[in-house]
Image 1: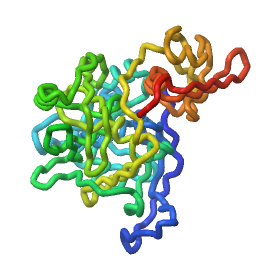
Image 2: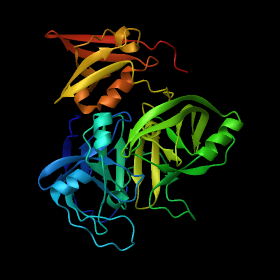
Image 3: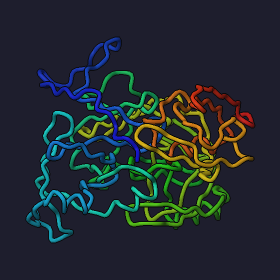
Image 4: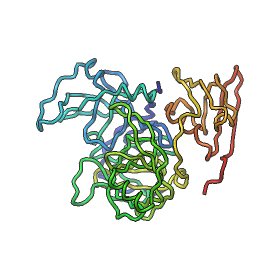
Length: 377
């Protein structure tokens, strides 16, 4: 199981005179700050329920927070009065850092056992827009930090509307332009990892007909409803405002969504108060998408220790020098204790990017480094 994210600091301050811009040279003091996994890995922060921490996914793509059905039973959550006649909801009181969370409309429940088992990920629910609405939330994928801020700092990049005029939605959307298509809103889904986009069937068919998308493969996946199969395609390009990227990999789905793999190209600052997201190019901006290959290496976790259990002898991990039995401590400068098993296998399954690792083998600390097999354009 992946270790829960560490709470760095949780300090809640009065806003005083309101959201005035600070001098550019001053770093804004966050209202709360959490350490998260970097580089487009699952964004998890701990909820405190009955004095215990439970990792929850940060999911801007859902309106209502959801809690694991087994945990709901263990906590004996009472039913919440239904005002809409929809899905049954439950009363929950929790804390996020030093902030009390109340859910007047209740929370939903789902079975997260398939995700925990299939992804080897410790997760007990998803935090939705009933938590984040009205807040300013910044995700720094390069540093691996999620911050709640009193105002949008200067220098956060250009603002893009996320609550589209004339299209009411409880979740944020971002207008994307794909080749040959008019700009259309995509749900900003921070709970989805892997490739950059989800594309619905009508749009996918249109992109294929116009020659702007190429089918790469069919890919198995796991979500809270169990195993899934989707089509993986390469789209010729993508544009957000004046920000352009080539060769984006997307997955067929029921909805149009922007996933973490695309957002991780930026410093992302959500201003849910005013309905904008600020995007500033990050270290990952010019790195092209690549197909995810999880067959190159297998690892297991015991506490904070990650051990290699098998290596494809012809793959990038073996070429780097990894062997079965190695204790993998650092990957590309990041402690593996901060990374999910899925992300570790994803990084080690790519041969188009430089790799550096630090392992312990028979009591000896070894460092390995490799260059990408081909130049990145």
